[in-house]
Length: 297
Image (cartoon, rainbow, N blue to C red):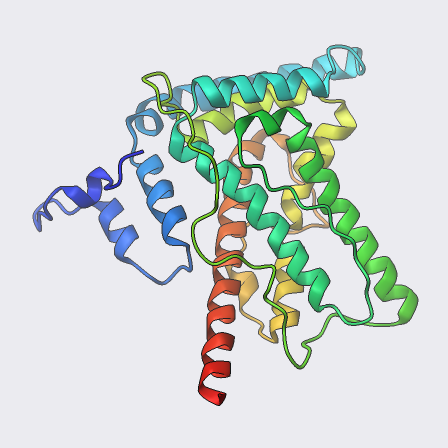
């Protein structure tokens, strides 16, 4: 990965301003620096500009075909182990370093957000199962499937305990941010060969039909429906922080109205962005708490 994205290294031309430079300099949306650079460099790539428009309609047509196939042969072709070996090989061979970094960040940050909720929900004892891969070989351990399963198990476990005790999510006297990392994540160097050029959105669109084919219908629908839990997790965080506006950062809505799997690829990108903004917001609160403690001392 280059240390300086092209949209920052080139001089600003007032007659032809770069939209990517504008989005990078804008600070209205909370995003970590490592994420913002990788995200915008990925968005501005030639792969996304030229390859994505060709891939997206073909990928969505494949989803329709595979859904029909699943009706006739619901249990054929399914293998989570094969799926994750293919994903790992493709990430190693074809996916850009920026896209791989964003994928790895997603697993880390998602785990940290759930940990924050568990730590700060009074009356609840939750044992989380964090997924924090540092190298590509860890993808083979059913990483993507575990991510979706962990999320549903967390929501079920948390709310079962709250219901049993007649409790609700609410702010506590002092929030525990110790599980929220602040800074770049410790991830091993990612492949950066000539073949590693596919951007994040194109990769997701390409792999979504494969995901559908090699998972059971139940697993694929669960994965798709998990995207709409963004709003649910956003509301959990908002209640713990004592604010009402954080769900405004969420675009995957509403959890009680499942959406078609045809747009699962696009919604997965929104899911990634929601996780990044929620985590960046928690980092801001963590820093503010640290400043308050330093001033008090």
